[in-house]
Image 1 (cartoon, helix red, strand yellow):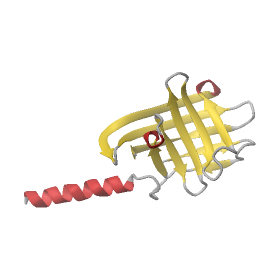
Image 2 (cartoon, helix red, strand yellow; image 1 turned 120 degrees about the horizontal axis):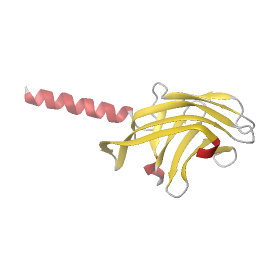
Image 3 (cartoon, helix red, strand yellow; image 1 turned 45 degrees about the horizontal axis):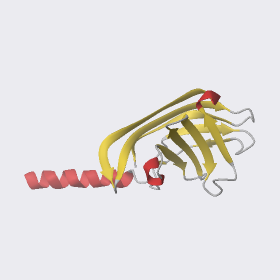
Length: 149
């Protein structure tokens, strides 16, 4: 009986880990409405989250796989949090960068869940934005992922 319970727990843990991997298709984690000259008007609905630790930064990437747009939070120890929005197909050509002072709302959370997957700490994350640049580029919305790795 104990062996069956242990097997069930292991199966559940594996299923949860697989579901939170970057690139796995699932329900949207939230929505962001973007507008302005850089990326045009559109609604971004991220379906996957990737911990910044994968690319050696403190923060996370929220990827809308359908549009190929990433909403990235980076917490810089010297200047504070910034949000960068860009297309995966041309990450350095069309990008929007929002600093805290350009936002009416820039709230985020980054908490370790206690799980470590492939040497990456899993995070429970959230991001709430209402930002506008002098250029007219803007982003408003929220997203959260309890298992970002």
